[in-house]
Length: 277
Length: 277
Image (cartoon, rainbow over all chains, first blue to last red; front, side, top):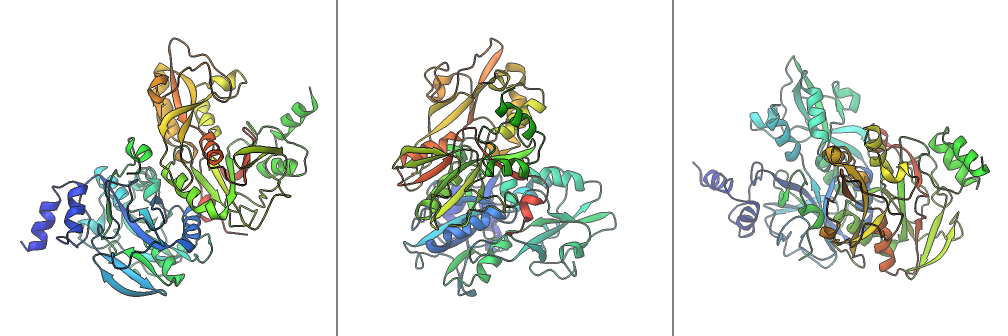
């Protein structure tokens, strides 16, 4: 077993804090799927305070692709609402740094970039409802095949806010026709993680030309008794941030998420009453 | 029948836009309970842009009392995400204007106060889950008795953001002991309208000294076979805004809500894809 696979296997047995500690100290910088099962994993967007209000307005107006689960104080790298001692400068395995809308670098910590001006926004991610689908006996093709979920630009307009505008990015998962209704019901229970699908069936209806040519990720086959089902995708805010050509913004690298201490259901008292530390 | 009762009765037959038109032209300035059934009604908070980011952070960190359903652009009195031609300067029956944490005036329009600096935040309200409780055969005592729901200051700390901090305000509704579980399940389906209860049973557990002495609203009796059930209350953000002693903030008058065009379930495509007009 390669060293990183052995480490991943070992980390799967640890809790969220232990996983973050391994990431923080540089022992682990790979994808987070399957780690700290049951804990919320988050997309990440870090922006300057002067656009943070507009970015939050944008997320509020487009809650399916941009479900906000945590917002840091300006200049404060900690996110106590999501977990103990989360330091956003070090606790994500890989970050992407964008300058003027271009990828400038991919790094494993952002301490050198942090400033009093930055605001962290954490957004729910599809791992949450995928786990629920699998737990309810609905297989998820790209996970079965160890691929990256196929993602597509759609023609679905987003509600703009300030410099933030564009069209929704959607993921596609083939679902057996007898389970499509269940898939809607199960994922609808997680509005903080993209919620119910945004469409099903003919890809042309939402402006997708060819399901075999995703804009990001890998194509997956749709069987004869399956329906392509589309969910709002967490790449949407990244795409919108890039289009805004901000002087600086930082996101996680796809698949390399922030792992929170709160349950992915957001049930229980922790999320509602956790005190600032 | 008094004139205002006749008007209320007539307005109950109209849709949300027609009700807002009557409010806008000054024909109706009373409470909105029962109007435009099935449509989302909203608590209102209007603040200066310089505290808007912190207020949104506060709401995000305290989603049970402060569920944001709409945020206006700075200086823009329209809220297209919530409905056609909603003009927040005129479309709420009564407003409360606070200066330095003191009630300065109660008015039926705020056109004279509007400025390029103001940001409107609309928050879900308890009407939504009360309607669902009643539709599921769970009676709501204060509605049966034509009283105002009893509201209490609690000892439950809120997660602070900037100048915004304090304790949660909760409402209490007596629920038959056999229906408490149902009441949790039913209201949990509306996270944008305070969601599931925050507590049940002994009021002292959440810092309430005497259920017969609410801080706002009217006391209601709790029967022998009933349990007092507590929900997060939309007065919480008002209370927190007052404590912050802002030079100016504007809220709706209790019970005099903004009526939106979107369904109170927030289901259907309108809320997700409504274009800015």
